[in-house]
Length: 136
Image 1 (spheres, rainbow, N blue to C red):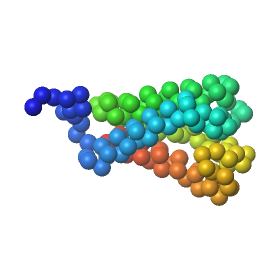
Image 2: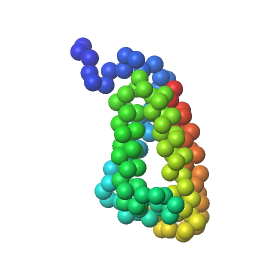
Image 3: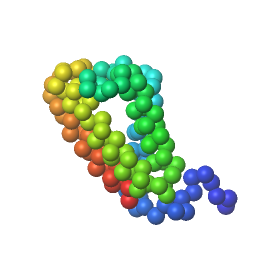
């Protein structure tokens, strides 16, 4: 059988960690596309005032970063330690946006109550943990 583009001769990850890596790659890629298209305004509303770039530039830059990280997690398993660590750092870096959404009572992504926005804050550490688990 001829090797495919998705052959993982260097991918020695356990099945659960591989699934975590691939799922996270898909999540990041999808979110990055959302940043640049249909969810752009909602993401702009989350950008805290202290960020030196305009909200639109911030959202576009973070969208590019998410797409890059997502594709790297999926397509470059031999670099999973680096990309997993970078994804975890990215999730930490954007956490102030989630806090800003909560504290400023910004309705976006269906988070239209304080309770929903508060519960979402716990999703970010879960994403950091998933990114670290995806490292292998």
